[in-house]
Amino acid sequence: MASSRKSILIVMAIAVVTAAGGFAAATLIVSPEDAAAQTAPPAAGPITVPIERKVLNADIVTRGDIAFTGSVEVVLSTGTNATAVVTGRIPEVGSVIKNGAILLEVTGRPVLALSGELPTYRSLGPGNTGPDVEQLEIALVALGFSPGAQDQLYDADTAAAVAELYKSLGYEAPQPPQEVTAAVIGAQDSFDLATQAVADAQKALSEAAKGKTESERLQMQANVDQMQDAYNKALSEPSPPDQAKVAKAQKAVDDANAYQAYADAGLAQAQASNAGNIADWETAVGQGRQGVESAQAAFDSASSGGPPDQAAIKQALSALKVAKAEQSEGLQAPDTSVAQQAVTTAAAALTAAQTDLDQAKAAAGTPLPATEIVWLADLPRRVDDVLVRRGSVIDGAVMNVSGADLSVQARVSAQEAGLLKNGLEADLTVPGTGTIKAIVAQIGGDVPGSSTADPPSDGSGSGTLVILQPQNVTNEQAQALRGTNVKITIPVASTAGEVLTSPVAALFSDEDGTPRVEVLAADGSRRFQKVEVGLSTGGDVEVRPISDQGVDVLEGDSTLTEGSLVIVGQ
Image (cartoon, rainbow, N blue to C red; front, top):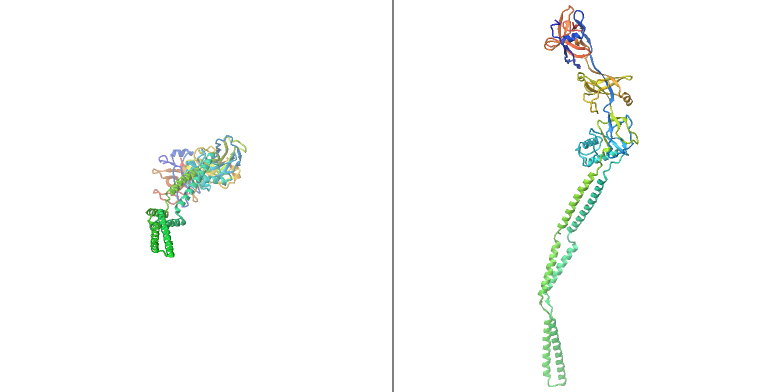
């Protein structure tokens, strides 16, 4: 029967059995001949092994190196300074470098360690754009500073955050170039002049908008009233008398008065002498009186002047119109258009000066020189070696740093890697120290902080990388354990109590691929028993009898039970 059947050895993939007791099965198939070759057949009869009942535990055992991950050399940019000298702040081996810490002091200036993958390739300052600026913004935010939007633009907010970073470390912030500072001074002077010009223009506009004062308004009204009176007077006042006519009339009055006096004297004398010509003298006196009256009337007429002077009336009217026009113009809202244009022009000049000043100040924001920064991925990191001392002229690397966390690097097969998951506990057997607990932290990929996954020193360079983190290790222990090669034991599965187990070599598959074992009965007869397989470890596999339909059946002599003999070879 053994020669006619199609025997296939099933190599199990290790599986974790849940508390519910379910089975997870996988098969690895080999030929019966291979199975037979693995055991030395006796001279006669089949080779059998009894079914056992026990607890199965699956462990992955490998070796690995304890190290601080991702060791790198730290090289500083010295710029144009050919004699960059280490002046202080030299870290001790084993110290931890955090994001934003001072890595070293060179020529009296700090060299900052910032978290980032892009290396330093230029100095940064206002106006710069690019991924290195964004990297800086992210690092500043992580340190609790506010560089503004993370937009790859080194702006005033970024410069202010850099200045705050330096202040927090006790150093003066880097200064911009002298020409940039001079540009700020010039722009400030222009801005101040423009500000004064706006103030002057606004003052002139304010004065122009005031209009006439109350006293000026009253004076204008008084002028109008005065001109009105002058015009009224011109309308009613006669024209001045003709002085020549007045003089002539006056002479006539004088002559008439003289004649009147002569006649009065002659009459008096005639009356006194009782002359016979008294009548003549009386006539003469009467004529004299008439002459005086006539002369006086002519004088009065000549002295009284003529009708109102039309020229004077016209002149007075013109003066009145002028006074009224001046009053009307003075009471109107003042014309401020010229003054307003002056304010507009001055304001435009001030805006331009403000823009120039803002740009100059922005350009003068705190820069970040390439000589004062080192970008390191995966901070914090640990100082492994210091390659300089105080007074050293920098020429090459200044120190070696690695990841701050102690780790164990190992490699396992792809099949074993499939059974691992992050967080699994492991035991590290350290020579002379005993056992240290660790957890699985990484499965696959590269060594953190390195560009390649360097194989461990035990020679297991092939397979999948596994990184484990030792637990509760002091700094002194970490220093002592660094570089040590240790045995690693990772429990990956266990059965839920005792189960039936069979040697993996006893498993075959039937035509439809179902696992089965060949049982040798007490009477020497043989039969096949289908089984469901579970956890496999150390050459043993968990088995459970099932019916031809794949349904669980009870353990027993007719199926499978502890002590049942299964055939592993002929």
